[in-house]
Amino acid sequence: MAEKHPYMSGSGGLVQAVNHLRKSFPGEVSAETLKKLGIAPNNETYVINILRFIGVIDAEGRKTTKAASVFSKHEDAEFQKGFAELVQTSYKDLFQLHGSGAWTQPTGKLISFFRGADHTSAIVGQRQAGTFQALAGLSGHGDIPPASKAASVQAKKPKESAPKPKRQAKNGAAAIVNPVADSGNVGLTVRIEINLPAAGDQDTYDRIFKSIRENLLRGGQ
Image 1 (cartoon, rainbow, N blue to C red):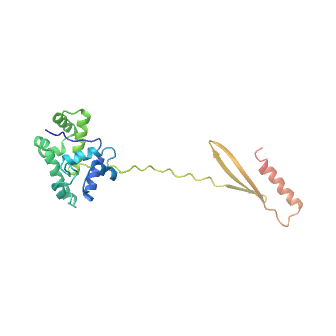
Image 2: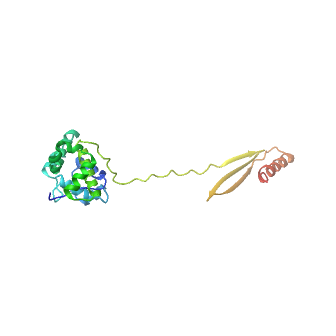
Image 3: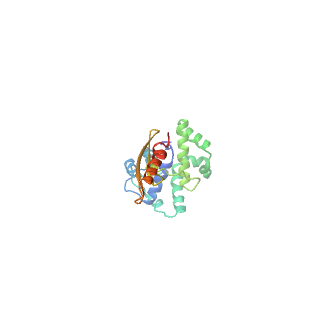
C-alpha cells in the first residue's frame, strides 16, 4: 500500500482528541492546535497523522465532508456507526482479509498483519495494533483506552500543622512550652507566668516559688 498504517505510543491522546472534536471542531486542526489544547503532549504529530489517515481532516487540517457528518452526531451510537465507516474504509486491506472479524482480532494477529503489510519493526507493529484497537473502541467495538489528561496535576502534600503549645500548671504557676523541631533536634522555648493570689501571705508566696524550682526548673535534674 502507498501509505503505511499510522501509530503512536499510547492511545490516550488520540481518544482525547476525538472526544474534543466531537464537542468542538476547530476550523483547522494541526499539531499546533493540539498543543494549545494540551492534547497528546509531544505526540501531536502522531495524532494528526492518524486523523488524516482515517479521513477526519484533509492535508490542510480542514474537516472533511464525511467527518462533518460523523462528528455532528450527538448520540454515541450514531457517532460510533459513522466513525466505524471511516475506520473501515481507511483499513480496507485489514477488513478485506478478516471481514467484520477485524474489529476483534487478537493483538498478536494484528501485529503480524501490520508488520507484514508495512514491513515494520516489532515495536512499531505493536503500536500500529494498539492504534487500531483504540479506533475500534471509539467505533463501538471493544474497550476505549482512557483519555490522557491535558496537564498533569501534582498532588500537594498537606501542610503539617505546628504542634500546639502544651500548658502545664501547678500551684498557681503556669508554663507555656513550644516544641520546635529542626533536623531531628528538639529545642524548647519556655515562658513562665505566675498568678499570685492577692490575699496571700509570705508563706504562700514562698511555697509557690519553691514548687516552681522543684517541679519546673529542676524537674528534669
